[in-house]
Amino acid sequence: MNKSIHFYDEDALLERLSRGLKRHCQEVVFLVGAPLSAPVTTGGPGVPDVKGVIDLIRREFEDDSQQLQMLNLTVDSAGIMQYQAAFEFLQGRRGPQVANAIIREAVLMARLPEFGFAETKSEGQSASDEACRLLESDAIGWFVSPATEYLGKLAAAYPARFGKRILTTNIDPLLEVALLRAGGHYFRTTLYSDGGFAQTEGTGCHVIHLHGYWYGSDTLHTNRQLTQSRPRLRDSLTRLLPHKLVVLCAYGGWDDAFTAALIDVVRDDTSFPEIIWTFRASEPVLGEHLARLIEPGIDRGRVNLYSGIDCHTLFPKLYQAWLGLEPESPITLNGSSNPVHVSAALAAEVEASTTKQTVVEGDVEDGPPIVDICVGREIELRSLKESRAKVVFLTGVGGQGKSTVAARYFTECQHDRTFSVYVWRDCKEEGERFENQLASVAEKLTNGKISGEDLAKQSVSSIVEIVIKLIGSVRVLSSSSSEALEFCSYSTTWIITSI
Image (cartoon, rainbow, N blue to C red; front, top):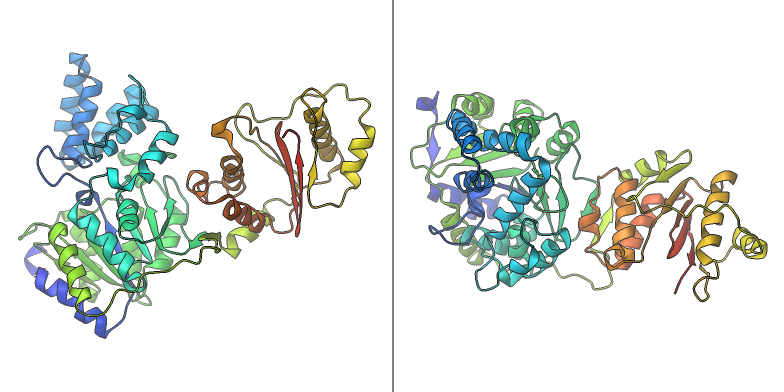
């Protein structure tokens, strides 16, 4: 088949994505992969490539010659699946936590040496989620390749054409860092199991990580993980791709949900996507499997192939081309607006799932204290039950029984079926601060469709607004040893048990 395939060159691609797009307006969706984040120079900063990550896995077994030999045999016999085979070997002998730790180590290799990251971890321990989040916010401390830098500039400067959505199989934060450096805005969806990305909407570029993220989620690396059935993701992709110009750059082609959805779309005669698939080699040879998958799209003329495309020169040239075509038009955010909100469909789904009493569980310590005896607080309990105030505070010095009253109220409401959803959270420690716990509640209510880790980065007012929209008219009681909150339709009661 390869002999009959025509490959266009970089000049043709730049013409199509600049003056061609200027004359015939169309939304572009980029899908980018590992070369965007890889080191540009040997030994330089960047997220290591397949060989580099396998070397990190080898280091895990460097003190055991037998295991190391078995790993090398596994990798050498895996053909083009060496990366997946190495992670399968690691999973069986170290488990998913170590696999995630190695991914964090790989991502941290993109930190610039003068900024470092040594303070984020101790010997034998990987960096914590909180440490990773802090490093991510330090935009100047990361190495950003020319491809990533100029893709960020392109998306920030021309958001209507290039910056609505970017899909990536990478698990690092470098796209987000590039957008921030360029003065752009973004919100993120992380998909490490089945799930859609249409539930969150916002202002800025929607960065969608198809294979998980470097902290706060698992990451997908083994063959089973990558090829698992993900019908909801596939549905989101098949809704997104039609009538878009989809550009695959620095992407070799995984046998995963994206490729399957792409093939579904190009096989559908009622769908009219345009797919640009670029290759770094000047004379690429398609593997038999990939060639067979994209052949229907090539036959329809809906899939065009381009060779000799270096992402580190393409994106700078494309950005410069657009500067010559029209002025930049970045998004200006209104400071009072909420940059992220949930779709009406997701809010309706949450409401429909809470037709009967539900207890939304948190961590092990997130549970009300057991109250066997509560006397002398009948007046306070009655006041709580009868109050129609939007905000109620339980105040007093320690030891007076504020938590006991809140716990008894929490229990009696369940007995009386006063509410539909019950949540107890502990907000005593710094890591358990209010916005983190409320973001966690949103994640639990949506069964993980909204990432609590990502949502916690928004302002408190934004998180509260999202939770209010999620529950709609559902009556929710959320209590803790520090504070208890009651949300109901257009009315909120907050019971603060310690101040």
